[in-house]
Amino acid sequence: MPERQLIERVRALHQLTDRMLQARQEAKNKAIEHPEKLTRIALAERQTENLRKTREEFAERLVREESRHAAPLSAWISAERLYLDVQLNRNLEQSAEFCWKALDAKPPQSVKMRTNRLASGRSWIMPCGIAAW
Image (tube, rainbow, N blue to C red; front, side):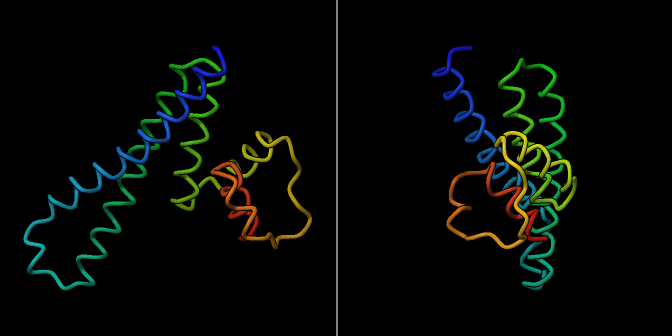
Protein backbone atom coordinates (compact mmCIF):
# COMPACT_ATOMS: atom_id res chain seq x y z
CA MET A 1 0.00 0.00 0.00
CA PRO A 2 1.47 3.38 -0.95
CA GLU A 3 2.40 5.64 1.95
CA ARG A 4 -0.05 8.38 0.98
CA GLN A 5 -2.93 5.90 0.85
CA LEU A 6 -1.99 4.49 4.25
CA ILE A 7 -1.89 7.98 5.76
CA GLU A 8 -5.39 8.68 4.43
CA ARG A 9 -6.73 5.37 5.72
CA VAL A 10 -5.25 5.91 9.17
CA ARG A 11 -6.72 9.41 9.29
CA ALA A 12 -10.08 7.97 8.27
CA LEU A 13 -9.74 5.24 10.93
CA HIS A 14 -9.16 7.84 13.64
CA GLN A 15 -12.15 9.86 12.46
CA LEU A 16 -14.31 6.74 12.24
CA THR A 17 -13.38 5.71 15.77
CA ASP A 18 -14.10 9.15 17.20
CA ARG A 19 -17.38 9.57 15.32
CA MET A 20 -18.66 6.05 15.95
CA LEU A 21 -18.00 6.34 19.67
CA GLN A 22 -19.77 9.66 19.80
CA ALA A 23 -22.75 8.48 17.73
CA ARG A 24 -23.16 5.22 19.62
CA GLN A 25 -22.92 6.93 22.98
CA GLU A 26 -25.47 9.55 21.96
CA ALA A 27 -27.84 6.80 20.81
CA LYS A 28 -27.45 4.95 24.11
CA ASN A 29 -27.98 8.16 26.07
CA LYS A 30 -31.15 8.92 24.13
CA ALA A 31 -32.44 5.47 25.04
CA ILE A 32 -32.31 6.28 28.76
CA GLU A 33 -35.92 6.23 29.87
CA HIS A 34 -37.15 9.35 31.61
CA PRO A 35 -33.79 11.05 32.20
CA GLU A 36 -35.65 14.00 33.71
CA LYS A 37 -36.73 11.77 36.60
CA LEU A 38 -33.16 10.80 37.45
CA THR A 39 -30.90 12.76 39.73
CA ARG A 40 -27.90 14.39 38.09
CA ILE A 41 -25.65 11.83 39.72
CA ALA A 42 -27.74 8.87 38.54
CA LEU A 43 -27.92 10.30 35.02
CA ALA A 44 -24.16 10.87 34.95
CA GLU A 45 -23.58 7.29 36.12
CA ARG A 46 -25.77 5.92 33.35
CA GLN A 47 -24.03 8.08 30.77
CA THR A 48 -20.63 6.92 32.03
CA GLU A 49 -21.78 3.31 31.82
CA ASN A 50 -23.01 3.94 28.27
CA LEU A 51 -19.60 5.31 27.31
CA ARG A 52 -17.90 2.26 28.81
CA LYS A 53 -20.22 -0.12 26.93
CA THR A 54 -19.74 1.85 23.70
CA ARG A 55 -15.95 1.60 23.97
CA GLU A 56 -16.12 -2.12 24.74
CA GLU A 57 -18.43 -2.84 21.81
CA PHE A 58 -16.36 -0.82 19.35
CA ALA A 59 -13.13 -2.42 20.59
CA GLU A 60 -14.68 -5.84 19.93
CA ARG A 61 -15.60 -4.69 16.44
CA LEU A 62 -12.03 -3.57 15.82
CA VAL A 63 -10.77 -7.02 16.88
CA ARG A 64 -12.87 -8.54 14.09
CA GLU A 65 -11.62 -5.96 11.59
CA GLU A 66 -7.93 -6.54 12.34
CA SER A 67 -7.89 -9.92 10.62
CA ARG A 68 -9.74 -8.59 7.57
CA HIS A 69 -6.98 -6.11 6.67
CA ALA A 70 -3.36 -6.57 5.69
CA ALA A 71 -0.37 -4.98 7.35
CA PRO A 72 0.37 -2.14 7.98
CA LEU A 73 -3.29 -1.07 8.25
CA SER A 74 -4.05 -3.98 10.60
CA ALA A 75 -1.41 -2.64 13.00
CA TRP A 76 -3.16 0.73 13.05
CA ILE A 77 -6.49 -0.97 13.73
CA SER A 78 -4.80 -2.81 16.61
CA ALA A 79 -3.50 0.51 17.91
CA GLU A 80 -7.02 1.97 17.89
CA ARG A 81 -8.33 -1.07 19.74
CA LEU A 82 -5.57 -0.81 22.31
CA TYR A 83 -6.26 2.91 22.67
CA LEU A 84 -9.82 1.99 23.66
CA ASP A 85 -8.53 -0.75 25.96
CA VAL A 86 -6.38 1.81 27.79
CA GLN A 87 -9.38 4.10 28.18
CA LEU A 88 -11.23 1.08 29.61
CA ASN A 89 -8.29 0.34 31.92
CA ARG A 90 -7.81 -3.18 30.56
CA ASN A 91 -5.00 -5.03 28.72
CA LEU A 92 -2.55 -2.39 29.91
CA GLU A 93 0.58 -4.55 29.67
CA GLN A 94 -0.30 -5.66 26.14
CA SER A 95 -1.00 -2.06 25.16
CA ALA A 96 2.28 -0.79 26.56
CA GLU A 97 4.23 -3.56 24.85
CA PHE A 98 2.55 -2.82 21.51
CA CYS A 99 3.26 0.91 21.77
CA TRP A 100 6.90 0.59 22.75
CA LYS A 101 7.40 -1.88 19.90
CA ALA A 102 5.65 0.47 17.45
CA LEU A 103 7.82 3.35 18.64
CA ASP A 104 10.91 1.12 18.36
CA ALA A 105 11.86 2.26 21.83
CA LYS A 106 12.37 0.86 25.27
CA PRO A 107 10.22 1.89 28.22
CA PRO A 108 11.81 4.65 30.28
CA GLN A 109 13.54 3.72 33.53
CA SER A 110 11.67 6.45 35.36
CA VAL A 111 7.92 6.31 35.72
CA LYS A 112 7.68 10.11 35.63
CA MET A 113 7.37 11.63 32.15
CA ARG A 114 6.99 15.19 31.03
CA THR A 115 3.53 16.29 29.89
CA ASN A 116 4.81 17.82 26.65
CA ARG A 117 5.79 14.36 25.41
CA LEU A 118 2.14 13.33 25.55
CA ALA A 119 1.30 15.73 22.76
CA SER A 120 2.95 13.58 20.12
CA GLY A 121 -0.05 11.35 19.48
CA ARG A 122 -1.89 8.26 20.59
CA SER A 123 1.16 6.02 20.38
CA TRP A 124 2.84 8.17 23.04
CA ILE A 125 -0.25 8.72 25.15
CA MET A 126 -0.87 5.05 25.82
CA PRO A 127 2.61 3.94 27.01
CA CYS A 128 3.14 7.16 28.97
CA GLY A 129 -0.19 6.81 30.70
CA ILE A 130 0.44 3.16 31.44
CA ALA A 131 3.95 3.90 32.72
CA ALA A 132 2.44 6.39 35.15
CA TRP A 133 0.36 3.63 36.77
